Image (cartoon, helix red, strand yellow):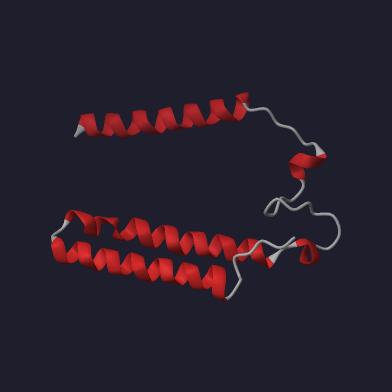
Length: 112
């Protein structure tokens, strides 16, 4: 019991020392570029609503959807043959949706 208490107290002490050391040694700069809001690479001059492009949001959303679906279902490849067939059917539907987004609905074309 004493060793567990010692490990927990040592971990908390080490956490506190490293956190305070990082805070003391870090460089603090309050220049205009450092304290200004940063939103998706757009400069925040004027109205933010006018400078934000919806195409950036659509691209990000498509990446998250396709990337997460592919990563989540890669585990099916290590199973039996029926799982591999279902994985390739899933990939067919994913790439079909990507094709529809890109060519049929033209929503992935970057317009500035």
